[in-house]
Image (cartoon, rainbow, N blue to C red):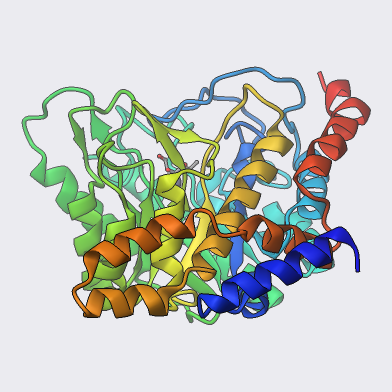
Length: 419
Ligand code: RNT
Ligand code: ZN
């Protein structure tokens, strides 16, 4: 028995005293799909043959060397990421992360031909793909409006883009054998106080109805809609607010996507999960970390992440919650950003799966809130780290110290040569 196994053995002893089986927790964790957001690798630039500034209220700051400039480079980076992230990974694309462009075809005419390299790559890796239409960084995002624009021609362009990406998602889903989650987030909004908030919202809902009019089997593709409090430059009114999209999702039986960086800074999405799953049945999470006004920092193992994972795990919501990471930091090695966030997501889920829920419930049911609090504090010192190391080792993954060695070697051999 090596040290990791011995430590795991002791951890099992301790957890079993709390009514928790770490072997089961590890088995469950292994099979929870986490969708890795490919856009951390290219700074949300995409691979179209025109370069536009990132618009739509998001910001990527930093210029660490090694941004993926092509889909091939991004896939190389993702190959490294997949070797360092235990568990079941998927990959999520933005609609402009095309494999290639075709002459005269814009986003409204994208087909699987634009993404064929991704399909081959995903097949080879036996992983599922997710995708999101891209309503920003394009001249047709006019005055900050896309699907809610007053001009029917502009709306039509974006409606066609949305439909195109849904069809591509369905093809991913069909070929790869698991539904592609297709997430709709639109940056539409106003910097300053609008005279009319109503009409754009009506137009937005109508455009979405047009996009979703084609029925696609959920075996292949699942639609989600993502709300936001505000983006940079659209501080006064965001058309796709939380109220807007929660209602839309409920009326149309879509997944609501909650991005943990899209709410008031003191508002946690953890409390929202049970409310939504209890009534809507399912949910998409964009797991992110907000810092002051920015919502896209690499996720750390902090209280917010722990409470999201906790709420997702303890009621057995795992097949009802779709996890996708969503952040972008260009001030550090992008592979490290992806790997660290993805491993933190897994760690948080593991800690949640190791929670002595039965004991906590018992104490709660006995109105013994002091004991419940004491136990919640005790959980923080339980040896989950030994279970984590064992989990990594049994999947032939390096431990936390080994990760940066691999990434630094890749940076030296590959990333620093990109200029
Ligand atoms: C933006 C949304 C959205 C984006 C991606 C890149 O605030 O969170 O999900 O992160 O479109
Ligand atoms: Zn998001």
